[in-house]
Length: 179
Image 1 (cartoon, rainbow, N blue to C red):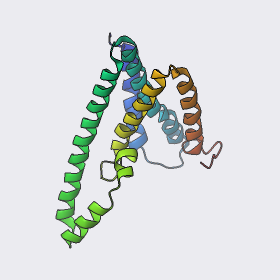
Image 2 (image 1 turned 45 degrees about the vertical axis):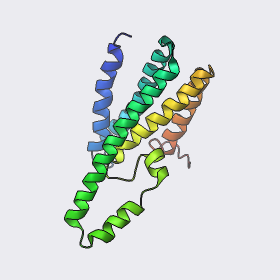
Image 3 (image 1 turned 180 degrees about the vertical axis):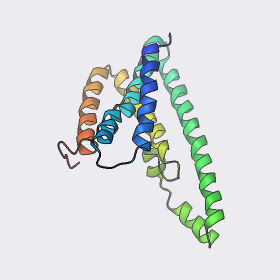
Image 4 (image 1 turned 120 degrees about the horizontal axis):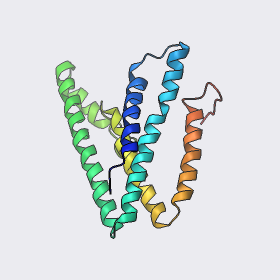
């Protein structure tokens, strides 16, 4: 499959948008409000681009399940490596700052849950790992709909959920959807 330069071009602006979302202060200035909300296309774009590229590979591969399995394992390895990194980082900070290290360490270990690690991608200071767990679940869902030949239905459902999420969070200034 050839490289898609249009996707790479938009990725550049999406990366800048992610930086804008996380760096600019949240205050009442209208310019920052507009900039922050305009930048909200970035994360849905990354999911859409990943799904599109995954789908293209699925179309062109004879053994689509084998490709699916390799893709999931690759993302899972990436997630687990970074999860281990952030866990070690957290433990080092704990040993540096804690007065009662065994008690603090026990609390750190006890606050982990399977749901946090596998579904939400949280539990460590590496909160940004949520993207990898969400990508894994998204690819699993996409693969299932792809096998059922219902990818267009999934696109429609995803668009509806995305709009609901936007009005439930980012665009609640316009219409507050309490979900």
